Length: 321
Image (cartoon, rainbow, N blue to C red; front, side, top):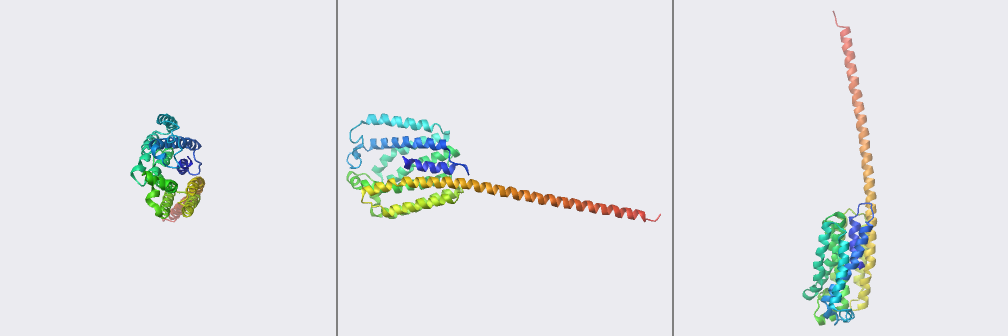
């Protein structure tokens, strides 16, 4: 749930007014939305993968694969989760409502991706981070390039941590025919994920540049990138527990990035206020100079006119009759 929610908070904080804090109401709505959509996504995934899950050690105890509940019961519960999510979505503007509803295409298709492509983690990234687009549009009214750059970076972030996560099941997946990036990359996982980390950092920097963010944002990007690089370097991909621990550690990265964005946006507002005051001061000084110049020019003209009048009097006085 947190991995679904954190990218939404990044988007909300980036889209906030300079110098202001993120909208608490929007943060709360998206927190609840992340909870319900995470539940809905898991239910859909388990309904599709019921037969697969019963053959994998880590997932065979899930309610559907263990036979504890029926498909119909799961469908009813799915309806309750989606109803709650819809109630939250209807609190947003029309653009966001349409955008949010369209995410269901990805939610339904993700479980099928692992049957046809070795890159289902990319589909998962597009799905989990749809909230980035939704959060931005809820505040700004539409989606722009800075938001799309953030969305691309978050998608890569998901690919990184879920590839590590999928290494837990790679041997079972090979036996039952399920595809994943862990199987596709194999021994090249760490070099490829390192490249993805660099691309993710570039996307975050690009988004921050387009939003005129200040130094705390880039410090947060550096911390996030450094921690991911260290995680990739140290994780033992042959040890399931180590992969799971690395996956769970991404909670702290999400929090660090959010704090960095909030601080950066606050300082951005202060910077703009100072710039505005300096501009007003410069304009005032220019106005004073212009007024002084006008006064000097007027005095000079009046003096010249007086001299001409005196010359005229002298001329009349000494003119012969």
